[in-house]
Length: 178
Image: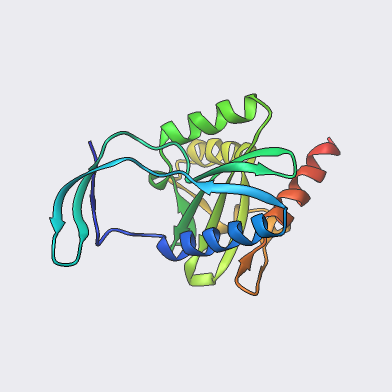
């Protein structure tokens, strides 16, 4: 089983942004999307500060978020990287398997990817991720280069809201043209 340490909250800034965005979407009646909690068992607790300092994961989680946006079932994972690419070691096989099954049932699965050093966000649909992953593996790469991301699916940040539904709409409209 994996262990969690309070020092290991990578991507928590992105998570806070997505949580804020989801709350704004809910208030506007655009979507109801919730963070999927990962079950943990505490090992060490700082009683003075009433915080968990060490815990282990009870089981692997699937994706970070799940819900519905204007009648479309959605699930997604938020990934943050300081690199010029999205490393595959950040994406687990059980996550991609869940996303694949989710899409087979008619849902929309995707990744929200934040390139921290560029301060750029991208909507990466699962089908595009899968195609890029296969291409990269054929080329012997362990990551998807930022340049391979679809520039039409770049996400705009306005007033603290990460408008990923706008990028999702762009993608879904392009899917219908095929």
